[in-house]
Image (tube, rainbow, N blue to C red; front, side, top):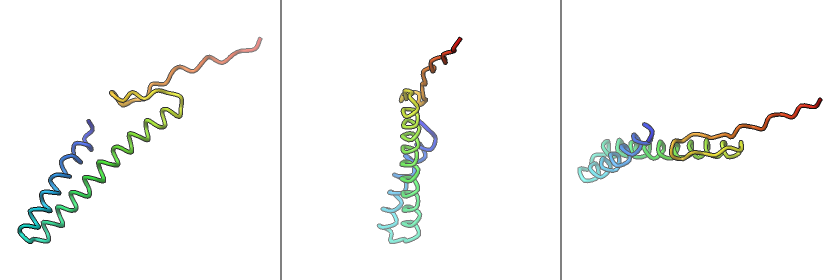
Length: 85
């Protein structure tokens, strides 16, 4: 699991908690900080997922096989070029 994904998974609930705490205490600054954390966490989460999707798509377009467990592209060796005598 990447650091960005862990950070996103921490920011989203923290932001939501700050929004709720700010609403109960009627503090706009706390709500704004919470909304910013929540929004940044969602942005980070979805950008991480889309980045992995793009890498997998590029690998498949190149004729390879995407290894989802280890997150890398497995390209098969291209056939050797034929030589004419």
